[in-house]
Length: 435
Ligand SMILES: [Zn+2]
Ligand SMILES: [Zn+2]
Image (cartoon, rainbow, N blue to C red; front, top):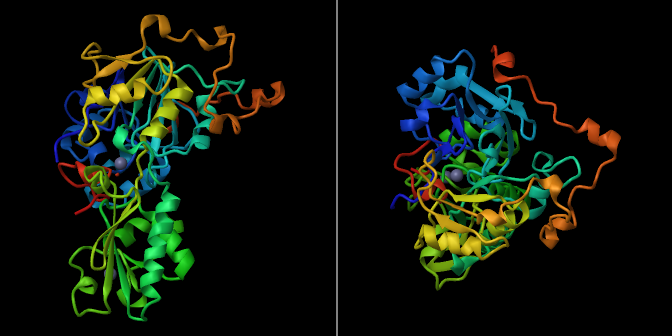
């Protein structure tokens, strides 16, 4: 697969921070942010160079969600990073320096995945989404993205996941809808004969837990996964109860290709369901949910990346001064992504290639006359999309507002004495990606 990422790990105005890249110029940073554990966000993470930089720091400087920290340390390859991890509570601001504050926010991409909100640097308020798939209401519910009056904070730059921002498929089925499609294919096959079995072919190492949970709830069966995944899921109790290492106890399999239980003659007839997104993007003629490949082979569209529609809604809601695409979608170009998002919302966005030297990404910005004034100078309220508006946080009373004012955790230095997504483009595999 061609290289499609166009984000180099550095954020304009935040030279002390590197995000999801741990090699090259990023090693000049002082703080390292890891949004989730897919391999295309982990380059250099296991390198001696990074460890050397981290060891030169007096405090842990590798920031990630608490869940990602637990998952990462379950893998021997990254064990040496344990002393350098600085787990963040989601939604709780963390003061890194006198001026620099970072907040991890839910990204709903895979277990442990977060977005990062950075405030206080020369780059102003910056939101880096990493890979994300948020429903509209989840964005509106995030206090850290809103001021005390419940208005979205002025965002200077939005570094956004544009993996599937193509016009051919503006919307993607929700993961719940995909799960129901899988469930229907599973139960229809299992009900035909007591020895029928299903193989769920998942492209990435993790990120399909929603499906496992739904199948377990509906059939009472656990999903057979390989020992490596069992080890991983031990850190996720909610998922651990839905999977098993015992192949003979279940008719649901999502084990390693070539596993003994998937070979001919090892059990009853198999129906194979491949969960993927890219296939549906590369084959525009097929339906946008499930596709019968022939025999007992099916594909179901399952995306843990935001659709074009969801990215547009995010841009429309936050109205950032600059939007920086992080990925060039399949069969597309950066210019095409720009046109799609620029036409999505007012004000207009435009391409400005190579103007900002600190990040490798191509940026586009509002025309100067369209740059938002500081929010408090606005006379009119920013209007979110209808879906969001219904559930926007209410304006709080002064007393309650005071209680919600930012109370940063102690600076890292003071307190820390003590991973289809990636499946489509990794140059190497993290423990959490496909084989
Ligand atoms: Zn990812
Ligand atoms: Zn199996």
